[in-house]
Amino acid sequence: MPKISIIAKDGTPFELQVEAGSTVMENAVRNSIPGIVSECGGACACATCHVYVDEEWIERVGPPGSIEADMLEFAYDVRSTSRLSCQIKVSEEHEGLTMHVPERQS
Image 1 (cartoon, helix red, strand yellow):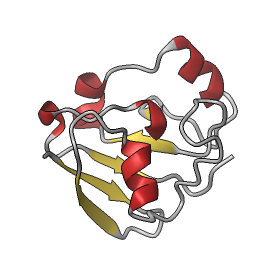
Image 2: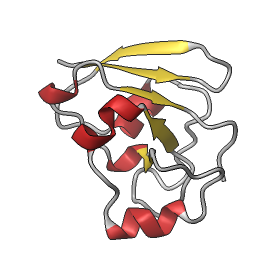
Image 3: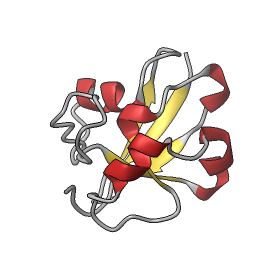
C-alpha cells in the first residue's frame, strides 16, 4: 500500500497509507482532509476536490484528461500542476506522492 501526502491549506501534512486503485479524493474524504469537499462524489462533475500536485510528481501523475481539464476551468487559482483528486488513481508507483490543497475550492 503506497503512502501519499496531502498538505492542507494551513500547512498541516496528512500522511495516508492507501490502497492501489483507489483515488486520492476517496482517501482524502475517508480521512477527513480539510478542504477536499468532493461535492459530486468523484464523478468529475465539480471542481471541489482540486489539488496541486508537487512539481516532482506531475509527470508521473500525468496531465488531466479532457473532461477533467474542462472542469478545472471552474476551479479556484488553477496552476500548471492542478488536478482533480477524484481523477488521480493511486498505484504502487505513487509511493511518496505529495499534493497540496488550494486556499479554497470553487
